[in-house]
Length: 262
Image (cartoon, rainbow, N blue to C red; front, side, top):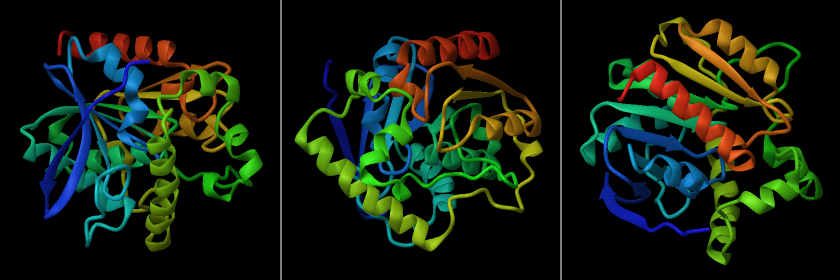
């Protein structure tokens, strides 16, 4: 599995780190809580021939430094769009998994004119009574992987996280994720009117997601103005890693159909 080279820059006085491959229309993908931009290795490899694929380590995660004053998940939506502007990206396709999907939704609420399409993979987006969202940090260590994915062996075979540095960054990322959660819940802002999110939106969900159950994806499909839900069988919370071929083909078909040649 080919490795990726990180890029580094300074923004708001702090070091930012990201992975970037290819050229063309911008496709920005946001990792989940505790992860890094490297989570999207399979997507970078698949889409780099037609898109400029940009996968940042969000502030505090990976090799990006914490940005003072940006200490809630909600605030990251504006931050990501501002940072993308700093590297020359105005309009973009924006996607995210789990917490990253929550950040993508926040960006879409704040500046919808810049986002051409949304890709939300098992994303935090709605709250429904009696359907709890599970904080992965609350899982016992021996149940962490089995709670996160459908088949740990498949995840192990496909994961881009393979080095000691990766392990150290993921461990640090859990601490940073907890730091964000201490400041504000990760759940959606109750003032949001998700009907305002009118750009084409792909909802991609693992049927066996135990963290953000599929029932929440179905509610999002009915709430967003222009959403399509695709369910991946035998898959948990991380479809971009667990089932990369299906994930890539589904995203590719959606973007081609809804945006043409981008």
